[in-house]
Image 1 (cartoon, rainbow, N blue to C red):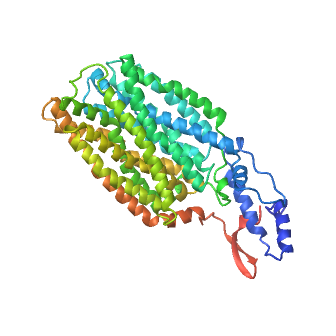
Image 2 (tube, one colour):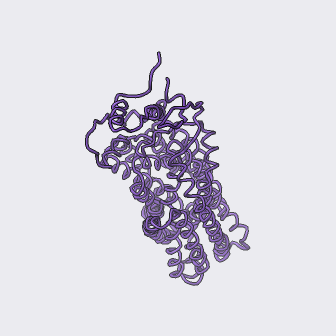
Image 3 (cartoon, rainbow, N blue to C red):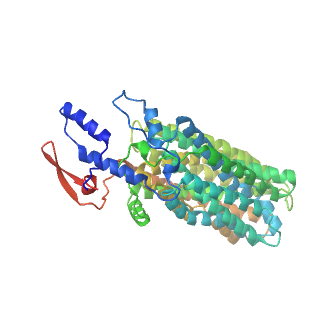
Length: 538
């Protein structure tokens, strides 16, 4: 039996157009209807488990944009805001857990009797497992219910973090193993969470919500230093620093299950041409997206610098204080608690200032140029490079100047976080965003902070001529200078991104990707129009 893929509403709209002497466009409408249905069909744990479809509307008055967006995503305005707040809390907890180890790193070195090279492995092992599993969760996140995937991942890394706090002194390898397993759980969250925000908001609202979400990166990182160092100092045992976030992680799982609602992919953007393609096709098309590739390389430089500073800055500042005579050498107890507290506070403040100023500047520049986002990212990296260089150089002569330069360098560096995420979301189609997030995580961490903490440690050990505090400071100082040069290279990649951003954004907003159907010709106002066969017959 021959059926036309059109609904009652489609025929009513067609009749209204005939009365107004408008051209009849039944077949394209049918294609849109079928494509929309196809884009929502996913296997087990599908999106339709929570978000109900919009009801057919009659010929009533036009509705406000917020009501249309609410109906399209299947999530109410209040629930959408609560979802962003919950995701922000989890992201803050995510980075807080990640950098708790950095806040007590000198104590871990003394406890296990390890050098800088092995200390750098703690962050490298974590990042490696995190980045290699990101594509797996990217694939799942594009096809299955994202809320349940994140819930399982958060519960897993909370339990593993708790287990790592009981590592005995003779088994440093066990701490490395548990830190690697923590990356498994965190990959399930960081890959997927931004795509949910993208399916709840568009344009300026999306940018605002992403800025809230990415505030959690520098703020959570800073809290990781503060909580880790201070809890370890109060308990006189660094192991207790790792027992704070697991309890908060269980709270996060409960909030995620009770509050967050799965939105429909791409519906809020009024996209009816979406369809899932194979993972290999996704990767192939993303590799041809120049804005995505170049911005990912730029973000890799950000990851390299932040990864190096995140692990080594408190230890470096502690060694500088010893060399300057401001502190005596420390061989046991919570050695770098003061430096971790100060650096953590600076990271929190500069994160808020950097992310907010980056978004504000980018928004104002968009009225003048469509290339505002990559230009602001480039400016942030290029401006951070000299201040980070001065902070490292002045560490031996002036502690005050060092902290001032760190403050300025981290502020400019933080301008990138929300903007880079926004770039990815608007140059990639909705059905491919989780995969794009995963690939960006892989490459930015593989060439960035997966190896940078270990590389800094290896270079530092190779430069030491003696085991004195002076040479331990100088060798680490020289190795950290590499961060400034990497920041300049990253700024160059963002400048290249600005050359292609307009073209790639336009393609993502109105892609013309082949569906595999042979086109047929349908008359349209005296001209021939090519539409797919599947838009006419079932």
